[in-house]
Length: 413
Ligand code: SF4
Image (cartoon, rainbow, N blue to C red; front, side):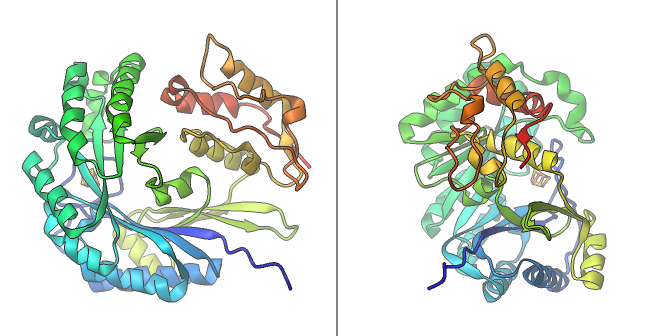
């Protein structure tokens, strides 16, 4: 009897780029239009799915995520037809997580999305204060949020919601404390807490002098941990809290550097493959951003790709560090090494530098990192401990990753 074929899990991200209005802090690929021809969009999404089926072959679909933009503006029929198409092309896991991002003002469609196959909602709540919602330029109010979350409970849909923190209304810690008190009774099994960022090109960019200091942010984070841990919610990633077994399957695919397809305008994807010599490759894909250009490309070529290329070994390592170090459990260094590789002694030195008490950016593992611990990733390899950032390290994640990736990282085969 032969060995069973291992079918690699795959997540699918579908980008719906339209919103009712534009929020002044938002830097996503989103547009406001008067009319959307859903038939044309359905045809394009189906064509892109077929293109990818031909390219990636047999895979097990573990997550389908409708993001945006505001995908709750899609008709439930369109969402249902996309889910059905995916089922005809691939084997879909019985535990598949089908998530749709929803604006609170679209709550009356929740039951229809549920019947179309959506089993998890990610709601853009942002705040339980009307004053903060107005500051963020949101078009909903607290009463809309409460009605929407009550409706999701009534329908029986699992949900997560997002809150935005660390903005000018949180200079005073008490305001964030009040926000947490108001939010807590509404939490289901998952909640995301995002720091307000002032991205170049957004109307909020000129307000960046209002950014809070790292110490203030750390204090707000510790208040959040203290408020959520009695509910059994663990901060499993920089911005995400969940009850046991309720972590987001979709985002975990990103953080553990597994494969995902990106469909729709501006979507990104990462697909593993091997070259002629059997070496591991990761293909980075990026679709055309403008909706019309994406659709023209799909209608002409079957895909909307503007980038489709293998990452270099160092780019791949940098991405794995950037993603994996976001997780509370840290980066699995064993999964980072290709067959036959070992950690470079200079990387181990840099890790030890970050562990030093005066920096306290990386948590000291029970078994210290050492050159002898940098065993190869072959079948007989020793096991490397995970690389885990401290709370302070996660607060300056990008700088820590830059430092760790500055120089050789692995010893080649
Ligand atoms: S609704 Fe979401 S995607 Fe649309 S503009 Fe606001 S933040 Fe951006």
